Length: 593
Image 1 (cartoon, rainbow, N blue to C red):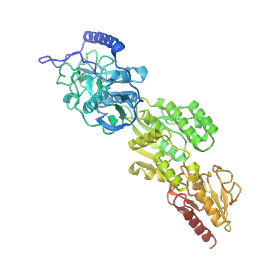
Image 2: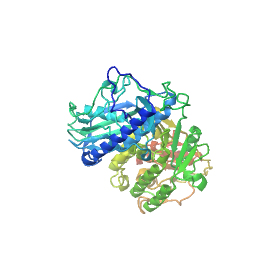
Image 3: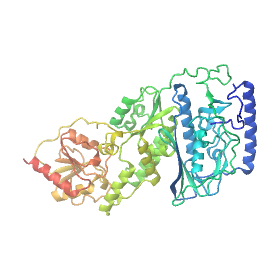
C-alpha cells in the first residue's frame, strides 16, 4: 500500500532524499489533515457501501486480472510477504461477491474498510517518503492495481485513481495501469455502465480478480477516464527499503534487516475424525513449528472419534462448544437421512469457523479435513496457502452424480433423492479441490480421481478373527445400514433369488418391512457366513469389509467402497442384482467342492 500520493518528483529533482524525523512529522500531519478532509466529504457525498445481493445471472467473465503473490524472494522480506498475502486475503473476503449495479460508484475503501490490526490486518510493506516501510495493511496496492486493470478492461468510468510515486520496472506502474490507495484519502473509484459482480480470490501463488456480467453483455468497452484524478507523473526510480539501502542512521531504519533468518514454514492441520490412516500421515509429516486444530481434545477426554496426538506440535486448539453443538444436532436429526446430512454440514461449518483462528498470517500451508474445506474456501481462509486435503469420501459433485443415476434407475426409492447439498457448497468444494496441492486418502476410488496429486495411504487392517469353518450355511452378511446407497436393494434381490439368510449388521433405514420375504439371521457374529456383501453406490469407510477380509471371509463389494484389489475381494458394479447373484453362486459353488 502506498500513501505518498500528494508529492510528485519533477524533472531535475533528486531521485531520493533521506527521510528525517522532521519530514516524518510533516508527513504524519498531512495524513491526518487529508484523512479528516476525506472523512468529511464521504460523510456528505460519499458513495454507498455495495452489497452481495440484488442481481442474478452475473456469471460471464467481463474482465480479469491475475498477478503473482510472491514479489520478493529475499529471506529478510518473507515475513512481510506473508503479511501482504494475509492482508490481500482479508480484503478479498470483503470484496468477493460484491455486486456493482450499472452506473453505481465502487469505492475501494468503502468496501474494504479501514486496514487496522483490530480488523485482522497485519504488517506488510508500504511506500512512505520514498521508502518501503513496514506498516499494518501494507501490500493492498496489489489489489487496487488489479481492480483498476479489470475496470479498464470492462470499460468502467474511472472516477478517482492515483498513480504510485515510484516505479518498479515491469510493474503495473511502469505501464501506467496502477492505482495506489491509502486509507482513507487516496481511493480508487470507478463506475460500470452495466451490472458487474466482483470475484476476488487468492490461489496458491496468485491474486485473481474477475468482473462477471450478464451473458451477452461482456464485450470490452473503452474506459472513460475523463474524470480520473491522477496528477503528475510517477518518478522513474525505485523505492528503497531497509533490506537494500545502507542509510542505517535514518529514523525509518529497521535494525537487523538483511540479517534476519528466514522464518520457518508453518503448517496448520485442521482435522476432524481420527481415521488411523490419516493420523499416521499427520504424525509423519508434521514439524515442531506446526499447529493442530481438532473439534475436541479426544486424547484427554477419551473420545476415540477425535483421538489426535497433539505431542510434537507447537500449538494445539479445539472447538468444544462447536463440537458439542454438532453432537446434539446429529442426535436430534437421527443417525441418517436428509436431516442428519443437513445437521452434519451446519455443524462442520461451525467447527471450521472456530478452528480458523489458527490460520494466522504466518501459516503458509494448511492440511484440512474435507468436511471443513468448502467453508474455509468460501470464506477466503485458504487463499495464498498450499492446501492439502484429508479426504474421507468422494467429492460432493461426484456423489450426487452417482445418486442421480441410481435414483433414475430406482425411482421407487426415496432415499436416493432425499438430499442434495446446496449448489454453492458443491461449487466451493469443487474449486477448493482443484486448487489443492495434494489429496490424502486411503480410499482407492477417491485417489483415482486426482491422479498424481493423490497421496494414497494404506487402509489399516484390523487384527483377523478366525472365520468359522464348516459346511456352507446359505448365509450372507450385509454391513449396511439398510439404505439404497449402500446396495441394500441388490442384497434383498439376491437373497430372495438364492434363498439366502441375511445377517444385517447396520441400522434399518428403508422401513420396517424392507426385508419382507427374506430369512434374517440375528445381528451378531458375521464370521459364520458364506460372504460379506456390500454392492454400494457410495461407501466412505469400509471398516467391516476390511475386518472380513482379515478374517478370511469372501467379500463382494464395489469400487465405491474404496478397497484395492486383493485376494478374497470380488468387485461388481454398484447396486447390480444380477452381478451380485452371479458372484454369490460362484462362492457357494466353491464351498461345496
